[in-house]
Image (cartoon, rainbow, N blue to C red):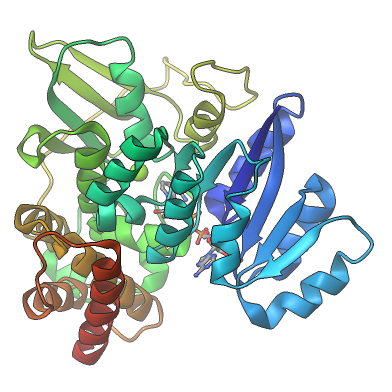
Length: 380
Ligand code: NDP
Ligand code: MG
């Protein structure tokens, strides 16, 4: 029985992870559940899955959650620090990082230092501090199992290989604005951006997908997860999201992983690896897939993708700056305080204004995150 701590159990990934756990009650148990604001859902989840502990990060909801679970032997904690503590519990066998944004970094580091294998959904952790995370994982001998569908596909494509990767083929759906002109992009609304063609995800990553910042972050994530330089990571727009990504080897052979777009597949594999478990999820229907298409991404219309490459190129804390600025403009766009194309402008200006650090420490990342948020907010 694997005891799993889910950081962000009320989100898109978190709820799907609980579906996986519910499908395999003989294999997995939810040991810890955490949420930030959706306290009602957290309470429902706790009553159903009976974890040993829950954390409601937002302290405003603590009393309500505590009272609602009073009749059960479930410990209730609150605050950001509690997230770091619960993942270290001796009973936890794996931590699924399904929180959104920079907030996922401290508890991920705490889990690694406690020797807990990581099922990594929170890509911002690798974007901000990939080098630090890799060195901690080496030091504490902790494996990272990718949950992001592309990285799970790459991971699956290299199983059993002993030769180096020649090139990663990182597929992108292109999002809801793939065919929009620059003029059309000027006036797109949050409601339009929130309608992703293939995936049903949390609001932040859905906006990142529309701007293609998500793909830029995935290039950074791939660099650190698979030790491949950015020049060897090719982004290919594939609107059908059937080919989830792949790897090319020295002989020209390409291995890719295909499937229905369903995050429960990579979540389940991260939980069960190296085994594959039975699932009730949909299967590909090969007779109806007439058009699988592939095209070059347009970094002129989708400048966020270019900015992520630029941050990688600069190195140091540059990706951390871009991540923080992006969190600010992403939220501002959702709230109608920033236009779609303005997001890239503000991120670019923040990248130029924030202090550059070549070899950042953990404390430097915390300071950079604060500084970049302040700059981006002032530019709004
Ligand atoms: P959601 O917004 O749906 O869920 C985020 C979760 O994190 C919620 O449980 C939320 O709590 C919690 N949370 C948010 N902020 C904080 C905070 N400051 N402190 C504590 N908890 C917090 O996001 P997704 O599930 O879509 O994404 C989660 C991560 O997985 C992201 O990093 C994303 O990039 C990545 N990912 C997601 C995919 C998807 O299909 N959704 C695919 C690939 C990667 P509450 O809701 O209670 O406020
Ligand atoms: Mg992805």
